[in-house]
Image (cartoon, rainbow, N blue to C red; front, side, top):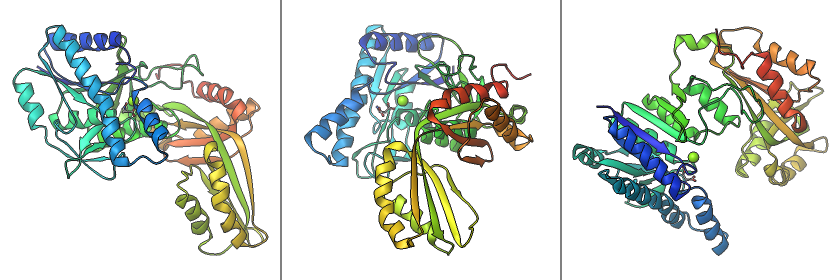
Length: 408
Ligand code: ASP
Ligand code: MG
């Protein structure tokens, strides 16, 4: 008998009919002879609706109370899924994050998992019950309700699978798996049979939002192999796991895009120690998340910095930079540009293959797409292009690496 953890996201439990569908799937999995633990999210839109109510009441709702409020979304779904299961004759029981022994730390609304005590879950499983666990929540050392950040039900599922040493962990969602690129943009994108944790993390941080990144990090840390698959059909999905030697044969695993970026360039920075710290420090204090950061060797005693950020942060960035730039002297200037998008090609294979960046740049050049900034990591090459060309760019790069065909 295998122990299977299945996580269902908000869309999968978004209506009563979908809840019935989830219950039927869970029952089928159990009838096939498995022990089953379900982890569920709030019905789609519920968490957003609760946040909106709080913000309509007050501009600055207390984070402790937000946790108390938001955790109710998942409690609704676990009770409803359990009732649907019981109606089908399944002996099921719902439990909250705290009851599942998910102990957290950190500030309210941004909880991190400290440790797990799965004894109550074990006890119920030994009694032959199916478990329906509330995602996205745990309990703080003081016994307070604590949520795990947006998308945190993924983290709950991975943590529960780790604590119970589950044989299988499945993230059931409204997509069929992880694709070589978004199929709405690249019609011949292919579902990947497998992807490494590191590639999945790079794809997520470059705009492919299939799963909460922290949950992938957690899975890597505890060696939890999991599968991303559809809750609406029985097709095999994508296995996410530690890399193995065969995976390096593929140069690029996938291409992801991120729209609505802005570029900021600061010129005339005196070539002295401490300047980068001052500039980036001001942006950090304003809680602006910078993405690409590029600096050139100083010329004529002046350096220049460019970085990208979400367009929505541009106003905040300009305000934060104003006093710093003024203090740098009269040569310092800020230039901004919106309407930028980022394209990233990700693959652990690029560590052992040459000419990968050249292939990508040549393909973009041949398509007449101008590259703005370039940045690389060990397993990623990212460029900015004009936002109006990003979909063409994704198709061109996807083709250049033959991603529509399965690797030989
Ligand atoms: N309901 C929470 C959210 O919307 C957690 C989740 O769905 O994973 O972020
Ligand atoms: Mg989600």
